[in-house]
Image (cartoon, rainbow, N blue to C red; front, side):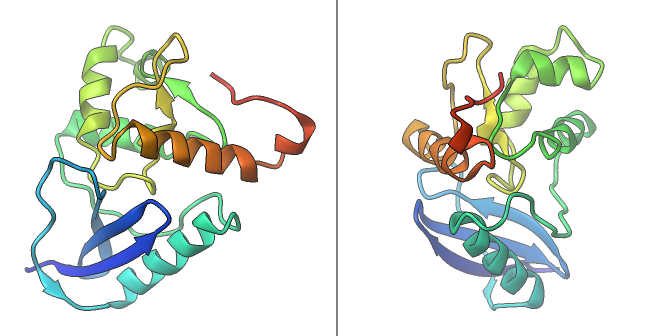
Length: 168
C-alpha cells in the first residue's frame, strides 16, 4: 500500500506527513538527513486530523495528540517510542530515565539511538529527551528546532506563569 503525503507548513518549517490508510507513519522534519517519504500527495482524513492537531499544538491549544500511529521499527525502538509519548507536555527527561522506565537501565545509548530513529517526531515527543546533565543533545530537526519546541512548550505550559522550570 502506498503512502499518502501532505506537507504541513509549521513555525519550524515544512513538515512532511505520511500516512497509510488511517494511521500516521511518519512526520519528516525540515532539517532531517533522512530522505523525505515518497507517496501520493493527497489530504486524507488522518492527514487532515494530523495537520489540525499540529496547528492546535503550535497555537498553544493542544498538549497531547490523539492520532492513530503506526511507527515502523524494531520491538526495542517501538518500546522506547511508546515511553516517549508518556513524557508530559512542557517537561523533559533523560535517556537514562527512559532506559530505567522500560526496564533496561544499562541501555541509555540504545535509547538514544532509538530516539534518533523516531519517525514521528513532535507527535512522539523525542525533543523532550535531553542529556543527564541537562544539555540538549541530538535532534533530527537540528538543535535550534529542539530549542524552539522546548521553549514553545515552556511558554504554553500551565505552570510557566508560576516560574517553575522544566523537570529533568
